[in-house]
Image (cartoon, rainbow, N blue to C red):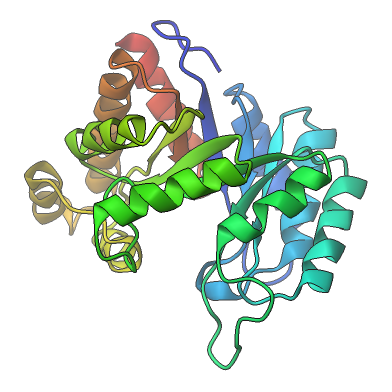
Length: 279
């Protein structure tokens, strides 16, 4: 997608719904996203390590083959052996999906990692199959990594393993992101890095995300949460406004791309795009 004031590509992340897959509901949602002309749409595994590759591939296939929008299927490896991963890769290729986001994933309780410990070990397998491979990056550091220097070194290892691009974890402080880009440049990381932005919609959502990924909360976000926590619609509007301002600033500073964690809400994404166009 190209906005009126920038050539910066904009993409979205969606997630498979819980329970039975409602294809009609999914297509209704995709009708909304397709109108926004995204650069690509990524489809997650479920959080917490219990991913369902069939749902992920089914939805990524519909996006790719019915809507003609490039799709990216997320693929985790920590809870799978090589045979299982190879089977999923076969299915990805059979469905005409060209790009995969290689992730370690969350360890499922009771399971012991076997063939894979890190996402970088998955990347060469995907490259061997001719796939375009993305990997995750963490502007404020991964929650399990003790220091930012190690975190950037691990990012370089992913690039050296064959990663073609990076999608960042969500963040709310653009200054932290710019400092991250400086560290990446010093490490000679040259592949495109897309900034991950998530509009806030509830206080519980933000607290859950902070616990999961360790993103810091700027004062402006705290003020928004305190002011509107009991008014869901005003909080939604304030969250969209904050995310829009973040994106506009990122675009002005020449980032490689914007990846919006849409929470499966095309109407919110549409408001953000409209705000960007007006800037």
